Image (cartoon, rainbow, N blue to C red; front, side, top):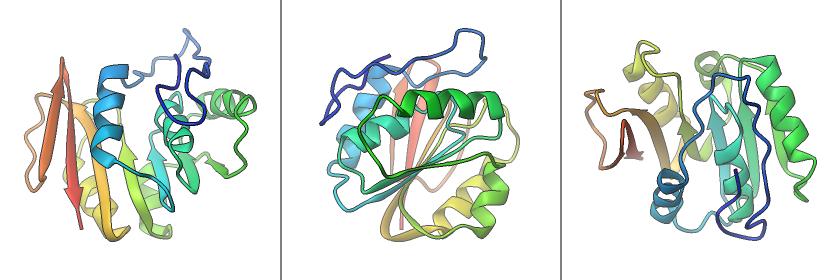
Amino acid sequence: MKILSGRFKNQSVSMSRKFAYRPTTSIARKSLFDALKSLKNKNFLDLYAGSGMIGFEASSRGADNVTFIEMNKQHMIQIRKSAESIPYSNFNFLVRDSLRFLKKCDKYDIIFADPPYGIGDLTLLIDLACKKLNPGGIFVLECSKNESLAGYYKSGKFGDTQLLYWKV
């Protein structure tokens, strides 16, 4: 996959075909970052990072720093390897459970979460993430179009996927 826009536009990010993650499609990524607008001076958190593509796109579009949280060690090894080819020094890589991390982490300006579909209590994830946003911050959840959730101010559908947005 390639970074769509910004200073690292067209930079390839390697994906392992043996992993079972579901990278965010390019059309959904474009919609997401068009909605977020400028990332300058923003701290970006990529939960359930999988391939890391969302965090790499955020770095390309000007985020001050990007933190990847991924529980699968092999996925994180691949993310770190991909990051070596991107001339950006403000990446943070943590092999952690996303919900546990949210309970103890600092606040962020933008939090993006793409948990495995059918993971369980998405309302807990939403609640924890929104509490960890700086004033004016945005939480974006990528989930199945079949999820019925409340409280978001914006949504977008892309095939079987939807992006839901909360703002504090």
